[in-house]
Each structure stands twice: as C-alpha cells, then as structure tokens.
Image 1 (tube, one colour):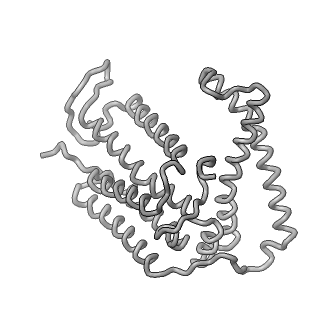
Image 2 (tube, helix red, strand yellow; image 1 turned 60 degrees about the horizontal axis):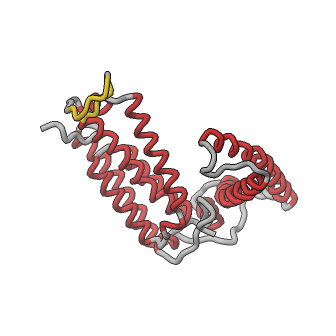
Image 3 (cartoon, helix red, strand yellow; image 1 turned 135 degrees about the vertical axis):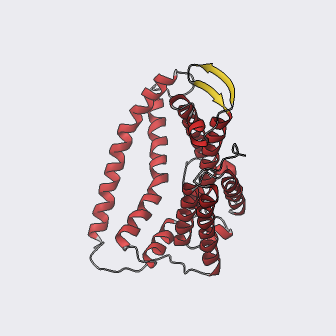
Length: 278
C-alpha cells in the first residue's frame, strides 16, 4: 500500500505516532517558522540532521516515501538552477563580497557567495521536508481532526481537514487507475516516448480525474447533509487523544528553536550568516 501511494497515513508504533495530532501541527508550524526566520547555515544543518533523526525514530522506511522524496528533490534542483539563471550574483549582493570561481559568460559567473547562498536554500528545504512528511504520514486524519477541535478549531473546519487528508491517497489511486486505463487504449506515458509527448498524454488523464473527484465530492456532500452534519454546534469524536507530557516537551523544544533563530538574527545582524566577513 505504502509503495503505491505518494502520501498517506502509515500506521506504526513509534513515539512520533503516539503524539497528539494538534501537537504535531503546532510543532510543524514552529519548526517551519524557525527555518523561515533564519539563513544561518549552522542552525539549518542542525535542524536538517534532527529532521532525519526524527524520521528514523518514526520507523518510516525510505521505500515508503521515496517517490515523493524524489519528486521534491527534482523540484529543488530545478529551483536552484532557476535561481542561478535569473540571479547569478544574488549571493554577492547578500554577503557584500565577491570571490569568483568560474566565469561562464556575461554576468554568469560562479562565485563562492552564490554557491553558499544556494547551499543555504538547499539545506533550508531539506530541514523542513522530513518534518512535513512526518506530519502527513504519522497523523491519523480522524485523530488529527478531533485534536484540532479540542484546541478550539471549529469542528466543521476540523472535519474538512480530515477529509482532505483522507482524500489524498484516493486521488492518487484514481490517477493510477485512470492512467492504466489510458495506457490500455494506447496512450503511452512511459520512457519510450519523448518528454513533451509524455506530458501531453498525462494531460489526458487529468480531465477524467477531475470529473471523478467532483463526483465523489458530490456524493460525500450529499451523505453528510443526509446525516445532519453541521446541525449542532458541537459533536463527539470516535478517535480522540489527550495531550500528555511528551506532547508538551515536543512543543517546548520546537519553540526553543524559534527563539534560537530570533537570537541568531540579532547576533548575525540579519537573517544571513556571513562567513566571508572577517
């Protein structure tokens, strides 16, 4: 199952899985804020390392998320290439110095500052990717919805989030089914055809997928209306989990990372750690 879908809840017995759903959301937000605040390479490397440690603790295997990991990596590499193409001297502007390594042509010069700047962006992505994936694949949608409602989020919104998380693997399963049906009709999306042809053939899958999704949304909406969803101001939950000491510790630790990132801004005189200044 996990090898088929890109993103879905994977049930395991780990410390990460046993955390409250709301705790994971709060920690993810705090973790992301800490990373957004700073470009300090030292902190980013520490958070990246801790992110992969958490992934190891969660007992999630790489094979279970390798497809989405590869897709994110491809996007990240393309992003770094585009940064250099559109702003090859951005690093020199940020750090205020220039150390040329290789001149290509015109303004396209590879500098130490640019490489360091793009390395920071690379690490920035990889410091948040493991935690983002953990949040999605270690959180039961129903338990997460009940946790949100417990901390004050309206249950209608909480339930909508739960449905969205549950619907991710369904959409992926529909895409695979429709794609195989299209291939049976002779629409090739394999490596045997050119990239442009493959993209064009994949587009033939999107329209049936959209109509299939709209139909399922309509069915779910009608079922919820028939069962009186939204009639009362409160509701009970089948799955609910109270916050315990590990939840509090996790929130405090991630909050400390936010404080550290703010302190580093003051120490560095800005968001960027500059190793080129003596």
